[in-house]
Length: 141
Image (cartoon, rainbow, N blue to C red; front, side, top):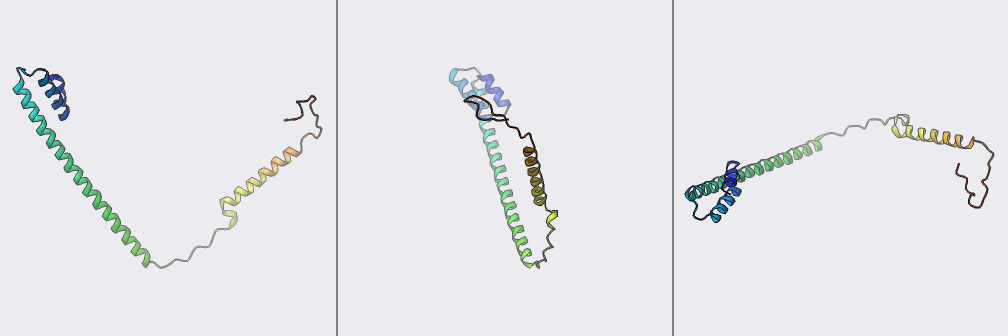
């Protein structure tokens, strides 16, 4: 357990290192290196606390930065709205002719495809031979 604690200590996983150091002391209360382990536990606690404090400070700074960005965006939006009110209306451009719109050519293409399918279906062989038997009343050719 001491070696596992040392690994966590070297990896700067302070809480895990403390957990394993204390577990080591629970298993071997009369360990010959008890003073060293106590010193390592105290050091891990100090470093863990300073790491948590640094993380809290970093999060506070990040929160402040995001708040300032939000305020700047609000100010910029208000400025754009104010400028939009001062702009004069511009005359609308004349619309494009119908033959230059995408939906017009989609309708034309659909109509041509429908006519072609109808012509192909009606221009086939007109002789129909019905199948024989009681189950053969549907011709699905």
